[in-house]
Image (tube, helix red, strand yellow):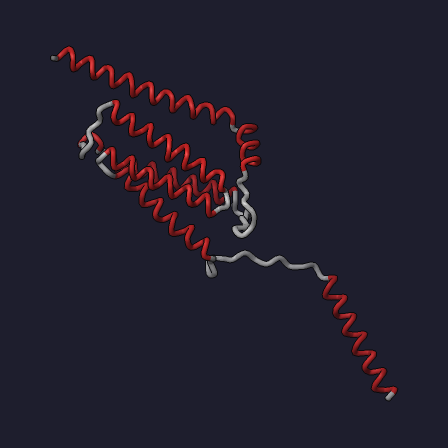
Length: 210
């Protein structure tokens, strides 16, 4: 009995030692899901990205200006969905309110004020398609390289709380990006004034010819 009891005590002591050693080891963080095991959110993100890319290509390839504006609505709406999937809810609603609700409306008003053709327009095409394609491909490649290099080790917890809150975004925007924000507003105002000026010039020419 004494030998059995001693053996039992030895086994229990060894078990406690192994447990203490296991607790002292540093915890290894779980690796994020990779390309071979995507989550549902990642799959939806890729699908919406493909649809947004298709709408963007349709925007720059169609020969009808109104259709281009409508495809632009689809592309900007797709970006808003991408922001939602990245837990940046405030940025998503800003995308909808400002770009979809204001910029596209401003573009449509500009088309109406300048009396642009509604149907297919030969003026909307250009012989420099290949040069434009090369420039666009180079710009896209540069942008992708810069973004991937800057955020290579950054991971977003899609299951956690929203990261693009109003307070954080507002402080960052109006502390570091005030000048570009105001420059964009001036640019939009200049586009509206230019559309009004062009429409008046065409109206004056029509009166002189009549």
